[in-house]
Figure 1 (tube, rainbow, N blue to C red):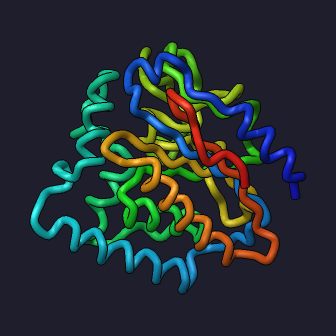
Figure 2 (cartoon, one colour):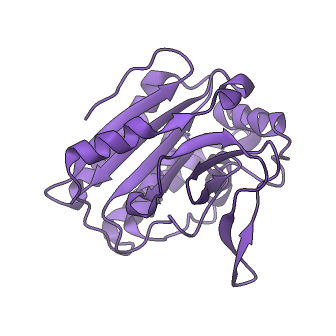
Length: 246
C-alpha cells in the first residue's frame, strides 16, 4: 500500500499542457488517486449500480437524442477542435449513454462503478491502474510519435495518435487517446487492481460543483470496497483551482 504522500506527489506531478487549455480554456480535470481498494469481478453491488445508471440514462434520453445533451454537445465540439469526427470516435460519456438502453458493459467492479457514476452525473470518466504508470500523467497535444498499445482483431498492436490529437500519456506512451475515447491496455484496470487513478473531465456548462459532486459519489461507492480505502484529489484548471487534498 503506497504511503499517502506518494499518492499526493503523484497527483502533484500531473499536468495539463498549455496547448490543451488554448484549445478549450474551460476544460477541467479532476484527478483522484485511490488506494486500499479490494478488487474483484462484477458483483451484485456493481450490477445494481449499473442498472440504476441504465434507468437514469433512459429517463434522460426519453425526449431528446444523446447529441443534444449539453455536456455531450460540448465534448463533440472539443473533438472537432482537434480534428476528430465525433460521429466516428465518440467520447466515453456519449458511448456509454448510447449503450444504456441495451445494457451497459459489466467489466469488473471498479470499472462498473466509475462507468455508472459517469452516466448518472453525465461526465466522462476513466480509471487507470496507478501502479502501471511510468512517470507523471499529463494531457498534451500529441506529436504523432507516441506509442499506444491496444488490441485490433484480437492481436496486441502499437498504434500512434494523430499529430495534434489530445491524449493522456506518461513517460512510456499514451494512456488514453482522443482525450477520453480509448484507454491503453498497459494501464487498464484488472480484477487485481488495488490502486487507481480516476480522471473526470469537464467542459462548460458543467460546473465545478457538479464535477466535485460526481467525484464525491464515486468516492462514496469506492469506500465500500475495503476498510482502508484512501483518496487524494486534485482539480487542474486553466485558472485558480480548488478541491486539492484528501
